[in-house]
Structures are given as structure tokens and as C-alpha cells.
Image (cartoon, rainbow, N blue to C red; front, side, top):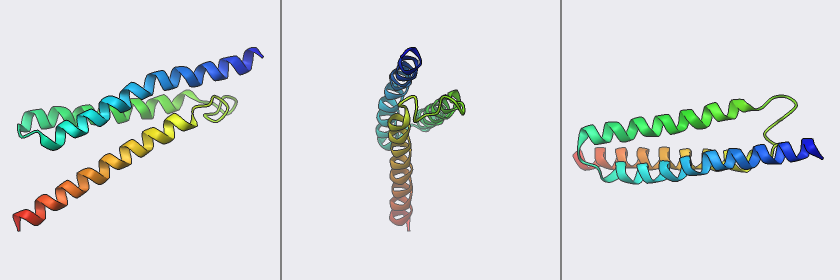
Length: 103
């Protein structure tokens, strides 16, 4: 029982860590899309990189015995991946539309 509780607790703690990062990440992406100041754009882009790095490093917390699945952490990491991929799609589309409009 104690081991299961620890695994479930690890999942809850990982969600508590990553959900606010994802929320702020989404907000920063929205800000970046409308920001015109290049210095602010660079700061926002750096923040996005840091948020992805934090999430990536958090995934290193698992072992062969305590896997993401056994700790109930798969959903939060899947959601993080979806958020990052949506960001890449939006950034690519924005860059493409900017290029098309400049031609």
C-alpha cells in the first residue's frame, strides 16, 4: 500500500509542477504572437525554451522500477507534448504567413 501511495503521490506532484508551466507556456506563446518589441520577443522565446527544458528534465525523474506509467504521470507528459507541438505548428504557420505576405 505504501509503495502505491508513493507512486500516486509522485504523479500528483509531477502534475502540480508541470500544469502551471504549461499554463504559463501557452500564455507566453499568445504574448509572443502579438509582441512587436524584439527584446520582449527574445525574452519570451527564452522563457519558452526554459519551460520545455524544465519539462524535459522532469521526465528524468523516472527509473526502470518507477516508470511514468506506474507513477500515473503519462497524461501530464502527453499533454505537455501536445502543448509544445501546437506551439511549433502556430510558430511555423505564423512564419509562413509572414513570408507569404512579404513576397
